[in-house]
Amino acid sequence: MGHVIALANQKGGVGKTTTTVNLGASLATLGKKVLLIDTDAQGNATSGSGIQKSTIERDVYDVLVNEMPIKEAILPTAHPDMDIVPATIRLAGAELELAPVMARELRLKQAVDKVREEYDYILIDNPPSLGLVTINTFSAADSILIPVQAEYYALEGLGQLMNNMQLVEQHFNPDLEVEGVLLTMVDTRTNLANEVVESVREYFGSEVYQTTIPRNVRLSEAPSHGLPIIDYDNKSRGAEVYLELAKEVLAAHGDK
Ligand code: ADP
Ligand code: MG
Image 1: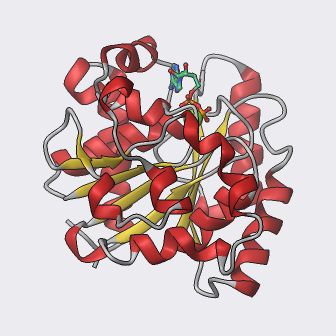
Image 2: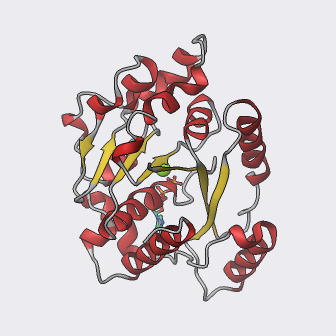
């Protein structure tokens, strides 16, 4: 039975999409069967894992709004053993279209439960907001992985994220957990970054991964080639750290 992990932080640019694609590809490299679900209308996880937008016929919008069977929207990515449910700009209308629908919060959960058996890890990339789509991903997930950028305002807004998580726990998903907190774009040469790392560890304690993700230019180049870092430059620091993170995630699940 697959673990379903939603990657969320309502701030943009903190490394949600980079982590979804690269943690996913690293888990697949370590022998796991992985499904990514892109729920951001920007579709960055979709293009970053090698899917050309012009070739997409069915996407997560059809699953959420039209209740199309999720299997019909799954595509193989550039990386072996990693599939994706793509997102396109059509998803931008979903918040409004879902608003009057019954059990609208559980549309994604109902879909994801139908493919859980077929994957070891299902990673859901979230948009930079806390709306109905995010409630759907939190309801569908077993746990939430929170990427936090090591910058001055790192902790700002995380209280709101935790509140949303609690609301979903109360109403839709009592077993929802924090999967882990990941520090991203860490520049250990600066005092500021080190201070932020410390304050995040103070706030979240053992939920923070030992692995931190440094700034690495290869990580920012890989998406424009439609490749996870491990296929773009497997010797890069970025490839190494995402593989380390994948091992930490596996260990947390008693998985090898
Ligand atoms: P989000 O999905 O939270 O909006 P992204 O993963 O898209 O964030 O990252 C924002 C930008 O920062 C992207 O251009 C991405 O390529 C770049 N980026 C993410 N992580 C790193 C990193 N560790 N080093 C360098 N650039 C990064
Ligand atoms: Mg993103």
